[in-house]
Image 1 (tube, each protein chain N blue to C red):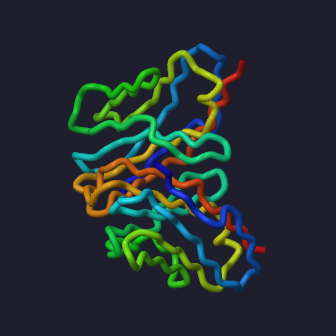
Image 2 (cartoon, one colour):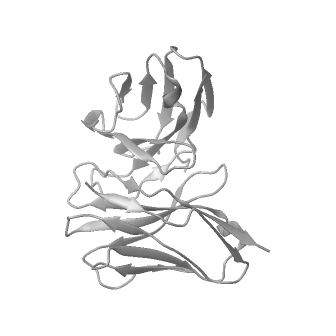
Amino acid sequence: GAGVSQSPRYKVAKRGQDVALRCDPISGHVSLFWYQQALGQGPEFLTYFQNEAQLDKSGLPSDRFFAERPEGSVSTLKIQRTQQEDSAVYLCASSLGGIRTDTQYFGPGTRLTVL
Amino acid sequence: AQTVTQSQPEMSVQEAETVTLSCTYDTSENNYYLFWYKQPPSRQMILVIRQEAYKQQNATENRFSVNFQKAAKSFSLKISDSQLGDTAMYFCAFMKLPSNTGKLIFGQGTTLQVKP
């Protein structure tokens, strides 16, 4: 079946603008993750959902970052009042069950550039 | 807190030869998973291999195998018979167990170039 998809693939924002990044997980996957990957670095965990419940948001860097998954499928990561340090690739991943050790399948990412 | 270190930013290997990528980690946990992920240029990250810390036998997946040294906190990836399609960035990752969230902690990555 289809893999994890993310949109847009590229986003350019002016400093201070709000952005919304979308993730469509693999159909039926219970768990959904967001990671932030700075240029030349490994991904860093942002947040985790099991169905519609956000069980861990410890990695969100500030209160300008907000994620939701209202119906337990599609998820949106919103960044308010973007700043240059928010420039990164934002990766979404999903896994089949509520078992946290299930294999995570990653999307292609959204590359955010804040000018 | 757990950390993962990949000390080789870039490596290259000739096609058909063998290459080993290094990874060390720091944790006070006794049980955990370790992973190697592959991120090809402009393509999605995929899981290459995983190892459960309580299993002494090293994991293998076709041409990919690991050398897991728990006492030394070392987890290297060996790629045999390297192919052009192995060109990618490789990330070592750690997950503590039990995990309430499935949070992965990644290293900085190693860029591998396979040369024809």
